[in-house]
Length: 328
Image 1 (cartoon, helix red, strand yellow):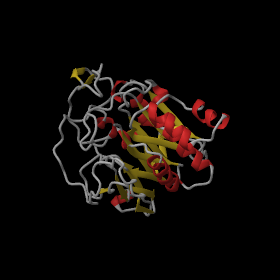
Image 2 (cartoon, rainbow, N blue to C red):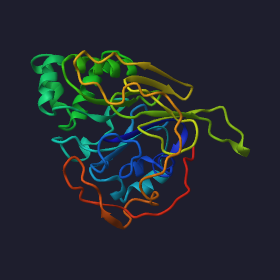
Image 3 (tube, helix red, strand yellow):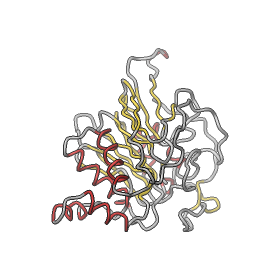
């Protein structure tokens, strides 16, 4: 159910972050290595990034598979940013299609992505809205403001109210999960949130990893500027990746990462799978699919696996080989 990534650090091209790594987010659209639910992420994609001096991010979203967008290679090659959040989508059954339904969702300076699902969507949203939103016109206004009729947009509305009420990012994510579960709802709630200065994320039902790195400077000497990447899964097999245990919330900046437990699930609730996973460094694993293609839009091979009970309509990218790795 989706893969996502956020980056903070020295200016980097979208290409170096999203398509160049050997197991990049681009490749995770059809060959994720650690995704626990679903097989492909072909229902759309989105990229959000921040320009220097502007706190409001730009977004580029499409409702088609990331490899099928002919404009992405040029955009990714020339666009550089110190802060990026991107996602590839595997849609929850019963949710709306289209680019408006693709993360990242935005509100002011914030970008948000959800990897998971709200069980029982859309019927469960009505019960949650009655329990967690104001009665009458104020609550109706929240529902009418949703960018798309999808569970992720609804969950983002609940989190956004907490952010606008003064919660910091990690507190807003953790409190939203606690309130959703206390109201009797279940699901998988891997959230990813940034304001361009810090990243907050939750591991609640699927995988989450992070890595801090020191980019190489002139002459190969390290420079005193760190970067941090938070992602659903590692995009390469190099050292330094750390897995976040399930039911934990993370706060990350280039200067440091903190991880703390979420509130325990209510008794009798449906716990997220994978609880108790230990933090560890990633070890190399063989890839289940051929190498990353040089760009989207290459000739198609046999069709993608069915996703969520429906047949994918586009072919997988043609196999090529690459030795590219992340550039920063």
